[in-house]
Image 1 (cartoon, rainbow, N blue to C red):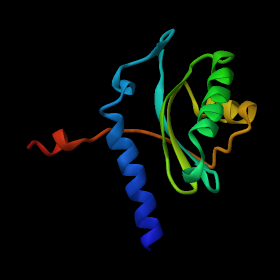
Image 2 (image 1 turned 90 degrees about the horizontal axis):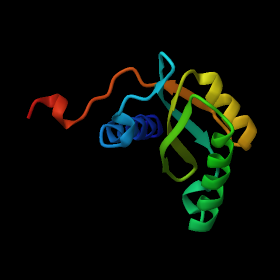
Image 3 (image 1 turned 45 degrees about the vertical axis):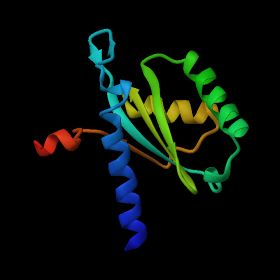
Length: 123
C-alpha cells in the first residue's frame, strides 16, 4: 500500500509540477494540438546515476527528437529506480517510437487530461 501511495504521489507531483513548466504553453502542429503525456520509465538505479550519465541519456534523447516531428520533451523527474518524463506529442505512438529509437523503456504512457495546482484550491 505504501508503494502504491508513493507512486501515486510521484505522479501527482509530476502533474502539479507541469503547471510551472514551459509545457503549459500550447504547442501546435499544423491544426493538431500536441497533448501532454507522463511517461514512466523503470530504470534500476536511476537515482544514483552521475551527472555525466544523465547528460549522456539526455543527449541521446535530444538526438532522437531532432529526427522526429510532433513530439517534444518538456522535462523529467529522476527517482530511485524510475524516471518520470513529461512530453508533448501528437499521440502515444510517437512516444513509443522515440523510446524504441533511443533504447529507453516506456513502461507506462499516460495522457494528462487535466492540470491542477494550489491555485485550483482557490486560496
